[in-house]
Image (cartoon, rainbow, N blue to C red; front, side):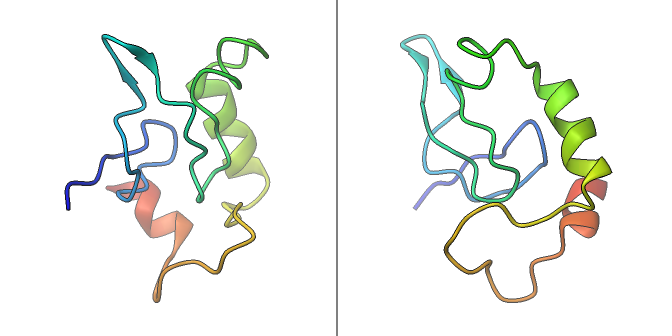
Length: 79
């Protein structure tokens, strides 16, 4: 299974590319909570601004589902 990298927080487990020629994926990154096509297009929040907010909040896991074993937002962002 191919996964895709979140350009906001560098989470490596997105099911779809965030954006493609067809448009945004509308997938919500479980790590940082950014929804491609909504957070950016509808709310006007850039990936860079969202990344800063996520960092300022302490890199929390954003999904209600548990994070993958060993998940670490700080380490993930350094990649």
